[in-house]
Image (cartoon, rainbow, N blue to C red; front, side, top):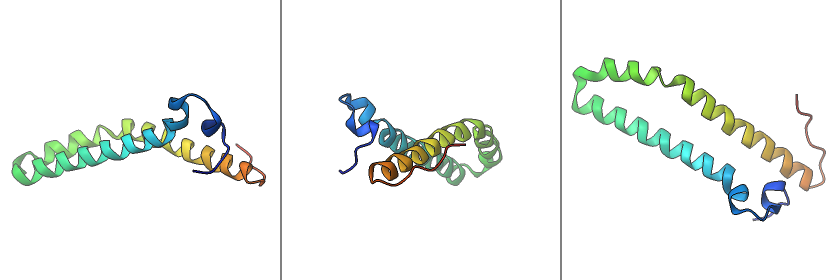
Length: 92
């Protein structure tokens, strides 16, 4: 693994692995949620409307989590660019 970003340079294992771990947790959580929803809809179609409505109420939680993940990815891209000698993009 190459790169000299602040996360990789840290001695703390949690700091080095926080962004990838968060991404994997988000992906696994999404997979588990969609699998559970699909399973309930297939096995008990009468509950489909309630399940879809319940899923819609989770929109805010997913918006926050995916927003955090987006910031992590954006900042890491800037760190990689800077470590390779390129100018980092300005943050707005």
